[in-house]
Image 1 (cartoon, rainbow, N blue to C red):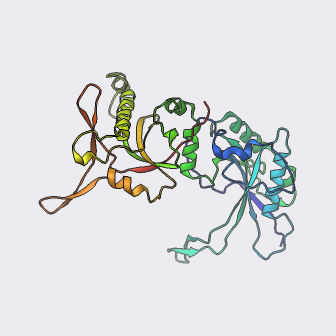
Image 2: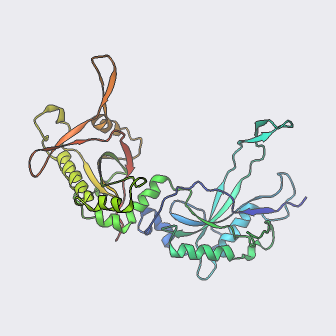
Length: 366
């Protein structure tokens, strides 16, 4: 029985669906792919976190026959490596990489002879070798779209022999099922960090901000307060009424930013905001501000990971407090801080009920 390598693009990568609008090139992970694109047969062009964040999923290769059969065609790895080199030798070259995925021996749904549904163990574990190409900042990037269109129509010479694929009206060529995807090695936090670091709008909002989260030297910080702009459910409202809701009463995002700045100053102040001892711990803290598209966020602390033991002190300080009522039942009391206002008096700001750790962005160039 002849055993060829089968080519497919139906392999589903674990991706994070995030909309990007700007360049990734200034991110600290990108140093490897800013160098010249070479095509050395002695090198292994293996996918890593430096590539992407958006790429073209060109194809995946796996054995067409059962294990133990005589191989007459190329192995999946051989086919993938040859395809990578062919892309890199094009003029202009296309940076391409190999990504190997181990199959899992998972159970599958099946039906017995009487039609009853049952779960059975899938005894055939298929390992895949994928080829991904390009390094693009956005799924809508014009260069990414142009490259994807080219790849779909491209017929590599290296795939003319030694591999097998099924021709169909929807798949006239070996690479016609290519699609755009994010780098499967990047976590959601890393992808979000890349977006935040290089989006021109976010950079302009945060670059010149005093105590900007860009100044945080850690990898993560704890979100303790959020000040949002206006929102409205337009299902039961006319478009005109919804628009008037947003255009009346001033700019709520400006108000949100002012409230966030006031809280950061209070948390960083050398002395407590009031003489009340319950608020004594809320001073001399490393507090930061971050503006996004819909809100202004206040964070505290610098941490090396989302599970950093140092987080506990801040979670205990800012998180809800469980109290026992006279009835014997327990209840949660949300913590707050009276923040002095420029016009006098205090604004009682509640802290987040469900705090989360966010990745610290790294400022790129505008």
